[in-house]
Picture 1 (cartoon, rainbow, N blue to C red):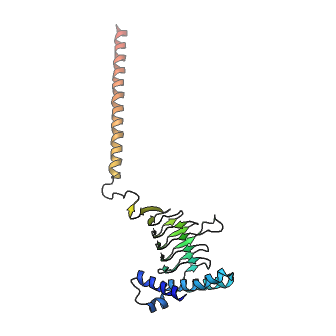
Picture 2 (cartoon, rainbow, N blue to C red):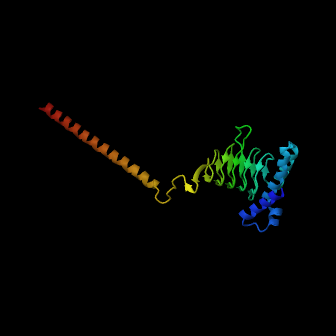
Length: 229
C-alpha cells in the first residue's frame, strides 16, 4: 500500500506542473484521496464485505466528488486530475499510469451483463468530459479527446475524437485527410452558379418557344392568304 501511494504521488508530481511537493499532493489533491480510499474499499469488496466497501466508496464520493465503484480495478500511478465528476463503474479497469480529467465516465450501456464497463490499458489519457461506454478495451498509450463518446474498442497508440468517437491518429500518423481550411468552396458562389445555370436553361426554353410561335404564326398567315384567293 505504501509503495502504491508513493507511485501515485510521483505520478501527480510528474504530470501536474502545479504540484509543488509531496506534502501538498498528499494533503490537498482530491484525486489522490479518491484513489487512496478506493484501495481498502476494493480489498473489502473482493472479500465480499460489500456494505463496508460501498460505505467507504460513498464517503469518498461525498468528500471528493469522485465516484469509484469498489469493484473497479485501479492500477498504480493513476492520476485523476481535478477529478470532480469522474464516475468509474463496477467492472471497469484502469491500467497503470492512466490520466483521467474531470467529468470522465467509464460506464456501461445498460445492454450488457457481467463485464459491463471498459478496460483502459496502460498510460491512457482521457480528456475532460469524455464518456467511454461498454465492455471493450482502450489500448495502451491511447488518447481520448475531451468530450468524446467512445462506444467501440480503440487500438493502442491512437487518438480518438468526436461523437461517436473515431480514430484520427495512429502510431503518430493521421488516419484521415486533414480538412483544408483555406481552399474551401464558397457556398454563396455555388448558389449563384446554380441560379445562372437555371437562367440559361429558362432563356433557351423561351427562345425555342418563340421560334415555334413565329413558325406557327407563319403557317396561319399562309393559310389565310390561300383562303382569300
